[in-house]
Image: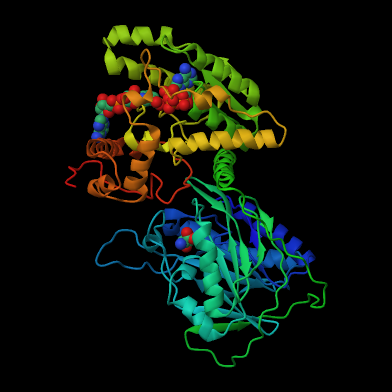
Length: 571
Ligand SMILES: Nc1ncnc2c1ncn2[C@@H]1O[C@H](COP(=O)(O)OP(=O)(O)OC[C@H]2O[C@@H]([n+]3cccc(C(=O)O)c3)[C@H](O)[C@@H]2O)[C@@H](O)[C@H]1O
Ligand SMILES: Nc1ncnc2c1ncn2[C@@H]1O[C@H](COP(=O)(O)OP(=O)(O)OP(=O)(O)O)[C@@H](O)[C@H]1O
Ligand SMILES: NC(=O)CC[C@H](N)C(=O)O
């Protein structure tokens, strides 16, 4: 099982990686190699699935990959690889002449220089971040490949999650092994659902289940890998580490095939047994342990950030360092992702900036070893203020906007990606200046509520201490009360409840989907709940134009939660 990190659209690079890992797998004596969902194209391909030229290129690449594997002397080993298939005749939806699905979400089995079998995903996820009903045509046949007397059934991701359909046919087909190729994005606690699902399917179908997932960042999603093989009794036989590319080689003893005749909706293809020596010595499989929850979240954001920077070919990142917790955590994440030598911090003191905002930012820069400069904003702000006659909130926001102009100016001049430092709690209630501190292209903390930002900071520091390294985040940035410092003595709690209370209300409203009455029932003050939920509703317009950031929760802002901007709430 090859847990790869494809670059979306890089058909050549992804194919080279598939050949490299197939060679490694063959050298380890593998009889069968499986890659993740859409490993050839990257995933999710979104509306590229409706572009015939993209589909034709992917189709041609799969055919050529089969030939290249054979030419590399790897033609004996069957390789299962995910890719978009098509173009097919457009599936017409009603009388609409709008673009409709012309592709399938497919898996091909390559052997002997050609595609010997192909399966199309039946169940197309159409919730949360997924839109597959819009872009794919569902398949309707179960594929079983017979290899060395063992029937191997094949499913694609969502197929495993739904009762009925192909999963129920796996039992009827009496397969010895079920291979599931996946593009299953990370969410905090998802392993508590995913592993039990794989285990349940193994026992229900009385089949060994080999679940191979992608790894890596793709825009606002991060795939965690965590590929696993589960025995018929539900025991874990092998498990790949999270957030890293990995080749998981495992010896299995599946039940030999008994069925001579299969139902009509199951297609069986007999594969050539290959030249691999079946008497090879057994391999002790890896069983990776899942790290602590906070480390998982940290690793998820680090990988998402690294892949966004690298896959979009940015040389470096830049961010404003205020001495506060959000910018400190973003800087530490960036240094972990791409190295401190590619991180540029700017202190931009205003006339209201406290001494500690500067000294804490200095301290952070020194601890991390990032590039650091100071650009005072007072002299830039005053001419704007005077010419436009800006006062009160307009003058406050002008300071945040001036910082945004500086960061974008340096980005244009020097090529850095601007990191947006805001967290989920702020984004929820619109507590940021649009075109000011909301500036930037990637927001590492976009799905991290403020209380969790503090928790991650403490975890990262103690992790460094445990390794005998310098903790990156100044203690003072963790312990001082958060403030935007846009006017003298301002703190976040002038405008918002304590973050503990705010985050609990936001969790109930956003993740829980509860009504105001339901949240009040949980014990919160009615006026506070009304105020917060109104702020959340009114800030939808800010979120709609905010930078993307990695999804780590069940309900991340963005594709996961789609609400109208213009509406009058009635409940
Ligand atoms: N539905 C809608 N569609 C399009 N535009 C809409 C809109 N509703 C308001 N607007 C526009 O939004 C403008 C107001 O938004 P905006 O300019 O952002 O300003 P606003 O949201 O009024 O103020 C920003 C708030 O964030 C706080 N802040 C700022 C900076 C950093 C931090 C921090 O702690 O990190 C906190 C600051 O103290 C203040 O409370 C209005 O002038 C109006 O033009
Ligand atoms: N004096 C400053 N110098 C540089 N950047 C600043 C400064 N003040 C604010 N910023 C930028 O604007 C973002 C918003 O920070 P602000 O201090 O207003 O609120 P915050 O939510 O407390 O964030 P932080 O915890 O990072 O301070 C900061 O993360 C930082 O990137
Ligand atoms: N790619 C898919 O089909 C993903 C859907 C699935 N339920 C998951 O997140 O694991």
